[in-house]
Length: 180
Image (cartoon, rainbow, N blue to C red; front, side, top):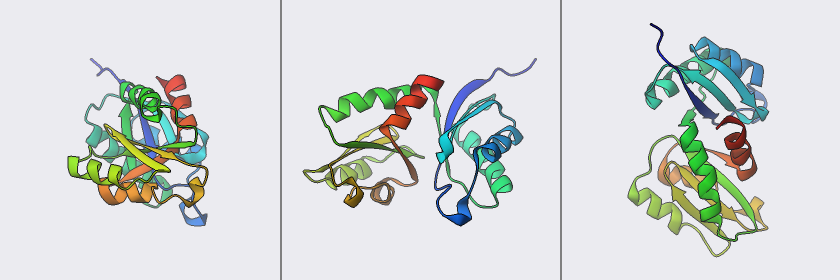
């Protein structure tokens, strides 16, 4: 009897940045299929992929995908996996965390659950114009009009909470609507 599959969403970190880290959507899909996944879909060229797998361990799924991505792309691709329910929750948390914020809203997606000390450090790193709110494995970055000069970036998140990849809230909402 075949094992049942579940749907997951993976976010790839640091691809399509510069000439040496090119990883087109078709190659991403091929690598995910090579890792034994089915029902593969990608969304825009920033490393967002939906797939079905019989694996249940997030760590095992991430390891299988990272191995397939390195084989396909020729470089390491840190990968962060969420269930559909987790992605829906991240999108829903955006409303609660934004609480009237009208500036830019980005979400740093964390590979590992954050420590309490890390949460406190990243939330304390904010200023009046830059706020971080942590919910599960997601850090909502609420930035002002000079967001391109922000000190509260994905690099700052990684300093306190480990490997993360960043998407704008529009992408998070779109993926939650399409894939969840």
